[in-house]
Structure formats: C-alpha cells, structure tokens
Length: 581
Image (cartoon, rainbow, N blue to C red; front, side):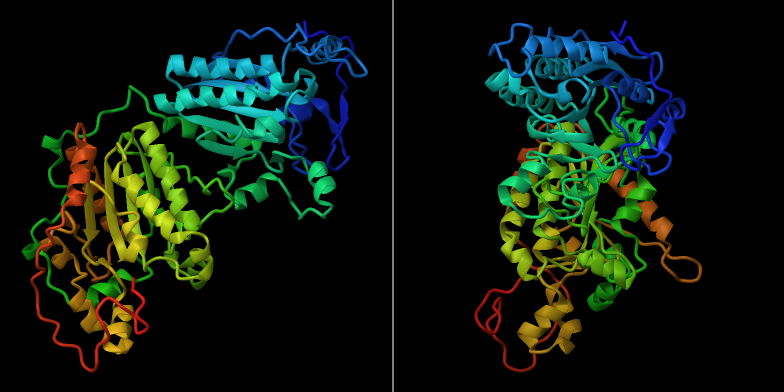
C-alpha cells in the first residue's frame, strides 16, 4: 500500500505551458509534456521503472528514517509529523530509493531521489541510502547510477544533514579506488548539498533538458547579489556550455545512452586483447629507408590538408559506444579537444585528440585545433578516467601549436600543459599516441607523452611551425621550406632519430587521392598492435619514465639545409630576446 486514499487525477496541467494533459498518456510519454517538451518530475520508484530492464530490479534494503529527530526540531509542525505526512503522500519512507538491476542488459546499481519527499532533501537516512547504494555497487563490481532531484540539505536535521555530503564523498572515493564507473542523471531541480556531492562527483554527468542545478538557488543568488540573472542561468543547457555537465539527454533517450555508457565500464568478461605474438607490426613502418622519399615542406602541406580524417572521424570509424565528455568541470569547455570512453576492438579505451574541422566556420569554432587551458584540463580529466577504469589511453594529435591568445595565457596555459605532461608521464595504463596531421609545439607534446608514439606518413612533429621558424631566423616566411628541412620535422627524420616508434603508411586511391577509409583502418590496426605489445607490462610506468629521462639525442642525418641568408638573430630567441616556441 502506498498510503494514498484519493484516486489519481485523470487530467493534469503542465506546469510549464499550462496546457491540460491526459494523465495516462502523460505517463506513457514518461511525463514529458507533448506540447512544450517540459520534463515533469518523476517519483523515485517510477524512475527506477523507467531505467531498469523489466524484471531485473532487486530493491536494496533501506536505512531507517531519522525517527529519533536528532535536533527535536519543531517549526510549524514537529519533524516526526512531517516525516509521517511525507510517507503518506508519496508511498515511500525516504527521499532515496535504490535497486540493483540491468540497463540494456548491463548490470548496475541505481539510486533515485524523489523531490516529492520533503523536497528530496538530504538527511541522515537519505545519505545512508546513497552510501549503501555505493557499497552495493562496490560489492558487485558494477557501475553506480544516481538520479538526483533535491532542494538541498534537510534543515530539520541540521549539522547531521550537512555531514552527509562528506560521507557520500567518502563512498565515491572508494568507488574511485576500485575503478567503478559512476554516472549521475541530473533532473530538475538539483541544489545545495546534493549538487555539491553526489551530483557532481560522478565520472559522467548527464542532465535532462532544462534541469536546473547549482549550490545556491536563483532566489538566493538574486537576493544576495541584487543583480539580474542571465537567461538560462543554472539550466542543463547553460551548464553543458560551461563544461559542468557532459551532455543533455532527453528522458526517452536516457536508457539507451546509459546502456551504452555502461558498456564502457571495466568488466571481467571482456574479450582479451590480441596477444603480442599474434599482433604483428600492424602495418607500421619502422625502417626509415622504407618510406617513400618526400621533401619536408611537402609533408607539411599534406599534413595541413583539410580533407584529412579528424579525431572525431577516427573515433567514429574505429570505435563503438563512444561518449564525448565535455568540460574541465571548472566552468569551461574547449571544442578544440574532444574525447571520452569508447569500445575499441573488444576492449574499453579512453580516446581523445585535437579537433580542427574542415570548413571556415568549423575551423573558427574549434580554434583551428589549438586547445585552450580548459582543453588541457579536460585532457587531464580524460586521462584520469582511463587510470580509474584501468583501460588504455589513445590520443590523436593534430594541432599547429598552443593557443597564442591573451585569454589562454591569462587562463594558465603553461601550467595546464605542464600538469598534463606530469600526469601522463606517470599514468598507470598503456598510452598510444598517433600524430595524424600537424604536431606543433607544446600543444602537441601535451598529448604525445606515451609508451608508443606513431606518426602518419604525411604528418609532421616540430617545436615550431616552419613559417614561425623562418620569420625568426630567416627574417621572412618565404624561407619556410628551408626551415622545414632544417627542423627535421618529417616522419623519416623523426623515425631515424628515435623520436617516433613507427610510421603508419597512407594509402591512396587508383586516382592518386588519399584513401581516407584505408588510412583510418591502418591507424586502427597500428593502435591495436601497439596495445597488444604493451598489454600486461608490469613495469609500464617505470619504463616510460626512464625513457623520458633519457637525454642522449642523436644527430638527425639528412640533407644540409644550408646557411640562412641574411643576418641571424640568436638561435632560440625572437628579435626581442624572448624565447620562441
């Protein structure tokens, strides 16, 4: 029995558009208004029914409600009386209901909050149920999915309510240590202590359309700051633009999206990767004398061709169940760097790389593949996810270099790159990096710290662009071809010097045009082979660190580029004495 005594109404008014809706139809539509697409509130039990596969739900035992009333709180009603009325009105005994089950055939523990129960407020019993759900996920070794709907802390329990935030954080820390994927579904509203704990601690945060989330509610913000709030303040769409949630997902799409995400969770039943003995070389060229000769400047021009596959092209062709994660979780998202978890040839990986685009508009929107400080922080977040899930990290590099704008410098670009270099140097999972186009400066280096570094046949890797080098040392960009030769940035020179581990050949069609599909397939074969050779290496990190610490750079043989014409400035400096990139 749910405690309700009156029949459910047959007609409801949509609170957003005020249009009358037939309740049974609204239920079939998952309580999404057919007129205005507003996502109306859903109870915790109904939410579990929407997400979990039929017949798989096993309710988790619930912690007892806080009947002892720790503060003996009394406002217009005694607290125990408020609890009793909330139970009678909702048919549940607390603001959190949890169950183990399957989503799209994949196991998970789901904990859902119910706003109808005292505003979904976070009290001792609700906090305990969230911690118990995390413990159940840990015991079963399955992902934890939480659905948030809350006004914040439960004032009637005072400091005991506030402490639940720290308890939940500790429960999530255990899941992090065990490599258990966590996903939060943010629904409207999610505020206060719930926003500052379970909602934002997850590895992946998805939100329903127009869901609002924040620590302080808009009324509080208005009252304290006495300023008008911007349009869309704290809504899912604005939070996604700020990189604070990963994506906005309509309710009808939640189950398939979650099922695909859960496919990327580490599972003992995964098909093992190919053995090193069976992997071969993946078609990778390791002898520079086997490469077709080409002028370095020609390689530069080909590396910049706009019809080359982009990072998103490679991911779409090579991977399944890819989920792009957006944002650095500190208030910005960088469209020049993309990535997320995916499935690659029978195993989970995290993939990321620079994204340039092809049209003028795309290039401008993606900042020509030059990551901002938020992009490097996003890369660090993705690398950390790979470490947590104990899966390989694969990076695709195609950038002219670091972002030269004032905003990037003010945003701490140097520190963000440095932090990424240190993180990847010690990352406890295999890393394979592929330079697919331009590998320019520190912007490229931030994603090339790896166990294996490959480069495409028509890609380049350099400390500076040939034009930049020519402008500084030759006093004019016309000397760019000569600078390209002097920099030894072509694959043959890099392979001969041991800077890269191999070159992926680029096939052409019968008409002599680049065969994009064949190139992407070749990259996939090469990455798979390298991962097979790296698999099971116990001293992976130590070998990577030792390799990075070597400083015996050999001479790079090749044609003498000749002495620059005209007066030279000091090598390694700009005309004003500032170091060049």
